[in-house]
Amino acid sequence: MTLGFHPTRHTKFVRGPCRFLLWNTRKLPAEEHSVRMRLDMGSSQDRPVALPISSAASVVLHAGYVVTGIVTTLIGPILPVLIGRWSLSDQRAGLFFTAQFCGSMLGVSSLGALLGRGYRYAFVCGFSLIAAGVAGLTLGNYLASLAAAALFGCGLGQALSATNLWVAEVAKARRVAALSILNLAWGIGAIASSPVVLFAQRREAIPSLLYTIASASALMALILVAMNLEPRAKEGDPEQSRPTHEANISTRSSLNLAGLFFLYVGSENSIAGWVASLAKRMHPDSGDLWALAPLFFWGGILTGRALVPLVPFRWRERALLANGLILAAVAICLLLRAKTFASIAICVSAAGLGFAGIFPILIAWLVKAYGQRSRQIGVIMFALAGMGGATMPWIVGLISTETGSLRSGLLLPLAGCVAMFALAALMGEPIFRDAGKHSDSFLPDRGHP
Image (cartoon, rainbow, N blue to C red):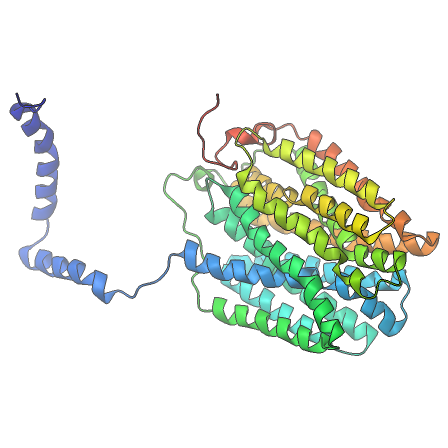
């Protein structure tokens, strides 16, 4: 018994491949073939060892994203310090958010030209501007500090947007999960922002803290300037083979997606930017505990983004977004009625948990809807996101100044959650309705029960 092995069939099976190999071998002259074999055998020893782009560059960019998390949320915990330094009204203090996110819009608007030359230029320019702007916050003049906020905001617009697009291009099958992990790194920096500000404030070392953050940003720029950061298109990639003018989204849904970017960043920064001031006014005798209030918000976002890759495959992205908005809206309603610091901490933690999955989903939708055009369309979307971050926190301060109640101003992010829920519900394309059935969902396709 030969266990199914048939000599004649086996000869026929191997004859074709052998003939193909022999034919290819005969095409090379003997000397050239010998030289090529020696080169191939020695290449594994002579070639310098380098990490793949998706590993080495990813590690550096995730580390840089921790730094951007600290810088993005820096204004919130130090805002009461800035208010006390120049005796600012809420309306004038809110201009720091406006300056930062106007700078972010400027950075995003320049992103197209930078990405046209390569991701490296966007990253190096972005982290360099962050370093210069954060160091500029040590200036003792109000207008100079506003200009510094705009400068590091410009760097954030370049670095944050480029990193999100880079990860979305590199990660194919698990895009939402990869973006959630990236934004988890950002959340680590965001959650560290309040404690480090509190630590520095107690030691009267705010300038030293700012110089340290600026140095870390400059180090990121120096590392990235020598790295290969361009993602290579894979053969058979449907997004790369799709015509560049084609989109999987209607004009109405494009406008809705733009509105979601605007409202999400505006609502998130309205809560994170003003919760420390709210806690300080409610409990003026609590010492400097108020500076930790934003920590609970970013802690909720950090926890949520750590959980997003574990969400069951049957959960569709739009369902996750809708449930997150409901949780955030309920948490904001309870925040407006909070009486103690503990209740404020619980409410903002729940709001952060609700917001956690929204931004990674929006980035994934952007790339799935526009394919190769996502770099160009992303510039517009990120600019609108920056506009939301620039205007909505300032409007919160304006409402607070006019009504004499910061709680009244925080009704604005609540309205933003309701508007986002409505906009998402009106987006009816298959990539939004059946996102869980596509390759960009949280887990690899395992079929449905």
